[in-house]
Image 1 (cartoon, rainbow, N blue to C red):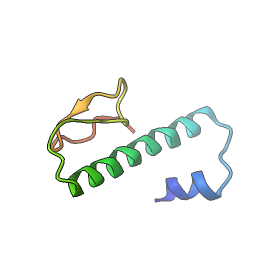
Image 2 (cartoon, rainbow, N blue to C red; image 1 turned 180 degrees about the vertical axis):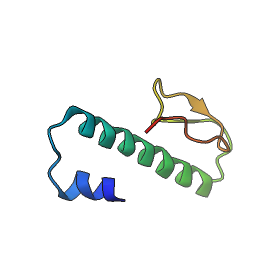
Image 3 (spheres, rainbow, N blue to C red; image 1 turned 135 degrees about the vertical axis):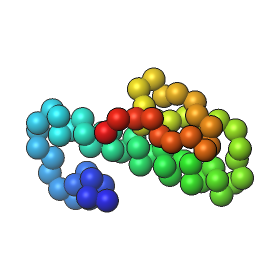
Length: 68
């Protein structure tokens, strides 16, 4: 949640690594939100993991593959 707060409310340092870290966290949060919504809709097929390079398709029971 601190990453979300920093992205929304606080200034980011211009350090390249810091920005990349928050972008990766944003993609991970996006994938988690998608999975929650898909579960609510009883979706059972593959979904796209936006937290991993290349955006692989995963099954609903697989863990996110992106490295933070």
